[in-house]
Image (cartoon, rainbow, N blue to C red; front, side, top):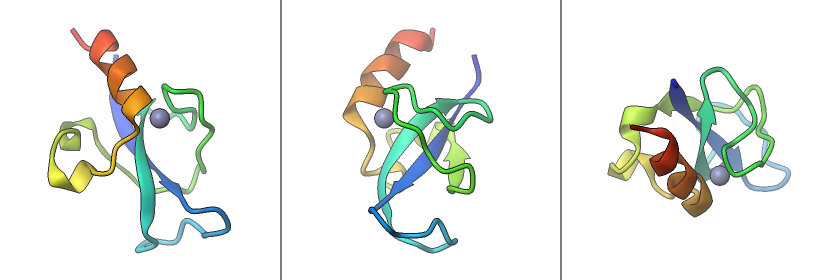
Length: 73
Ligand SMILES: [Zn+2]
């Protein structure tokens, strides 16, 4: 299954490009629902799942990380 990372922002912050990311979540391709169950903005920034585990992917949702590990062979 294909995944990508999608940003969550602080409450009240619009998902403009360049807005500070509160935490990264993992979603299934093109999705807006994180693996942990949180609904994310369709306009939120995304990045490749390959970024997971690198500094650019921090901070990352702990729960999404745990579920992602189980979904990826
Ligand atoms: Zn999450």
